[in-house]
Every structure is written in structure tokens, then in C-alpha cells.
Image (tube, rainbow, N blue to C red):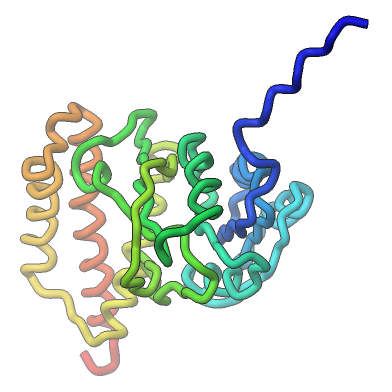
Length: 264
């Protein structure tokens, strides 16, 4: 009988001792792909914030543990999932984010011998089919790998993990494609602008003429000129204009909230 060739070892462990947490709301169009790409994780928890599509059914069909969270923020969804995690280490992802092969390899080494209490990971942001290497999108780092005792600060917009003094950095990145197309981008701008305005209004802020005029202009100049988005061609122009527009819309909503307030 001829000798059999030895089996080729897998590049990645069959299962990493890691819990991946994903907040969702109406992500039926992409949650299956997200979960399929995470088969190497020991546990995946989807914290659903009230989806009206098939997100929950699809997530369960793909082996995720689903918990339903009625809290008002994405941070609350993340925190509920973290509290339910069975592993010591947690990786926080969104439904539009994918772990690259390089990061997955690195995670195995880090979890085997962690040197820090948490780790920052760079986002590889894809916009209109192209990677944004310049502007703030090109320098986008977030603490996403941490121990389950940590929690996210519960703001409506730009939620982030509480401060961890001992934080390392990973060289692998997370591929992030936040928008299907321009229409989807505009829909998200409106949603996040309203949330941002509500956060500011709750803290007693009111919109000024400066907020409605100078702030958007500064945003465009900062992103397009100072941060180098002009080097990205037409994609850089579109992204920078929409960045300015999102700032204007947030303060326009804030002005509207103030105008309709009983104390205005």
C-alpha cells in the first residue's frame, strides 16, 4: 500500500477561545456572511435591538446565540452580549466588519499568551469599492479585543470601550464596509445626525450660527485638505463633502430640538 501524504495542518485553530459579540438591527442582508466568516470562533453572540426583518432567524440558523436587547443604544446591545459571554476574551464586531486572515492568525497567538488587558485594531475602511487610506478613515483605530469585565460607554453615537490603561496594538486589521452605496450612506448620515443631536440636546447644548456654518466648512477643510483626502480623487471629494454635510445636519437637528423645546 503506498504511503499516504501527511495531512496538511490547518493555518487556523479549529476554534479560538473567544466570544465575538455583534449588535444588530435589520441586518438580514449581511448577517449570514458575517457569521459564516466567524466559524473559527468558539462563541458568537448576536445582540438584536428589535429587527423587523429576518436577522434573528438567519443568525440562529447560522449557529449564533441570539439575545434580544431593548436598550436605546448600540453600546447597550454590546454590553448585554459581553455580560453573557462564556469566554474570558471578547472581540467586538459590527455586522459590516470582517476579520482579515492576518488578524485571525494573530488572535490565536495573542489569546495563547496575552501581554495586555486589551488591544487596539485598525479598521481597513472600504468606501464605494475603494480602501480609504487617507483622512480620518485611514487612521481609524478602536479597542475591540478585551476581557469580558470591560464595558462600552453608552452614548448614542460613536460608542467606545471604557478606558483600559494597559492597551496593546495588533498588526492585523478589520475590514469595514459600512455602506452598500451612496443612498445607504445618506440614510446612515440622517440616523446618526439625529442621534448625535439628541445626545447634545440631553447635555443642554443648543445650536449656534457658528455650528451651522463654520463647523461644516471646517470639517470639509480638515478632511479634504489637512488629512489629505484630496489625494483620493473623486472618492475623496464625495466623502469629504458628506462628512461636512453630516456635521451640518447634526446641528440642524439640534437647532430644531431647541426650537421645539418648552424652555426655548
